[in-house]
Image 1 (tube, rainbow, N blue to C red):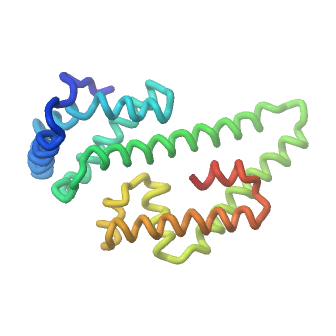
Image 2: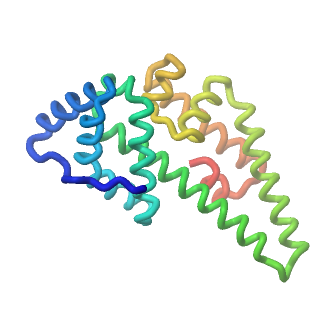
Image 3: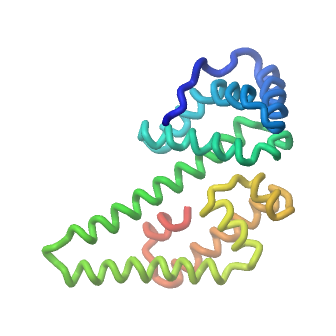
Length: 206
């Protein structure tokens, strides 16, 4: 059931908002349901606008917001370490939005292949080519250095933020960023070398 905000985000100076955020984060980290609800209510409007701009879908935007706050609640123990909460939740929303759009794009490709009954042989070839491309992607990931593989899996596939991945891997967020940048660069280079069209590379590695 979609969560519905009771009131908009807090008004006032940015410094006051940050102080209020930290109070709510500290309380939420200790399991305070009221503080968690207050965070949701305060951030809903801006986060919805952000998610909608990325997805152009009211339904997806609502789902993403709920996933963002589910993520926050499940990882509440680490909330007190967050410096900029707005940037933190925007990054989660961005990752979830991109993952959703990628999945939609892939589903459309598969649907178009299955719907093309006029050229069954050609469709079969396309389907095989698509599966081959995904296999090439998996092969490319497997060839990444272990740390890059871990970062890519956590951030790109599971949708974790750099901060969350850093905690899991016991490294700095800046190191996670460096590994992710290197991983994406390596994957793009490998897929292009294998002759995968740039549009497909962009869809798979973004």
